[in-house]
Length: 292
Image 1 (cartoon, rainbow, N blue to C red):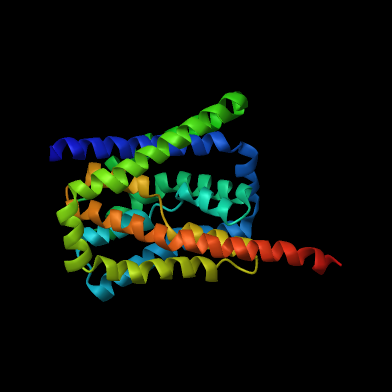
Image 2 (tube, rainbow, N blue to C red):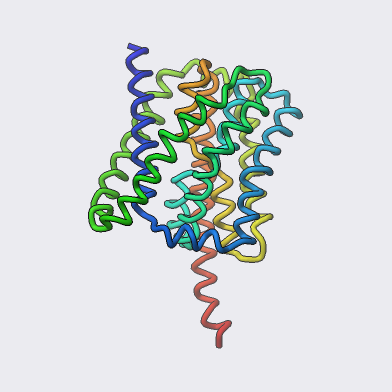
């Protein structure tokens, strides 16, 4: 029974990743991606925080707290794969600039396909990590559905709009069943071990505020950019991390740590998005007075 539940959870996670990335492609246009590329300063800051600062924070915490290798692997899987599709919903709830968020998400997701397979084996020398399986997994599960969605959006925009709603529902259901029902049941013992005995909760209590704080602090003077980058740094591509962990790491503690990261990041980012929403509403109310 356990084996069937594990296979079912892996299939549901794969469905979530494919449907979510495909729906992101259906949401955007090439013009939005190009517009994000033209914001050079904010883009450079986002890339630096996402691909340099966050992995550096993980390595520093791993060295300082002597984090176990499987937990370190889970943290680096997320830190080297920035750009979670959840960012779009959090940013929408926070009343942020969705065009900027979509462009940033597409760019980060595309660069991850090249960045993570090259960097992850160097950051995990104690574990057997091969770059080619990681690259193949990212191309098939992240880049391919994203590109297909972009092409379909450009060719048949009306069909893209109808498909996106269906895919969004499919992704929500598959994520909820896999990450909140099946995976916790399958990895119950590993979750207890990681959370209580391995110090996973302590690591996350330090890492997540540091990650969000780095995005906020380095976001610059633009309040909307700061809020977007803080939300972006709070959660990496969890779906891709789960898929890579299932196919490349034969260790239940890696999956357990990823589950803890998913739950803890949502517990932090959802209230934070509510705070940002109130700030955005306050900025909108002050803007007419400033103009006057």
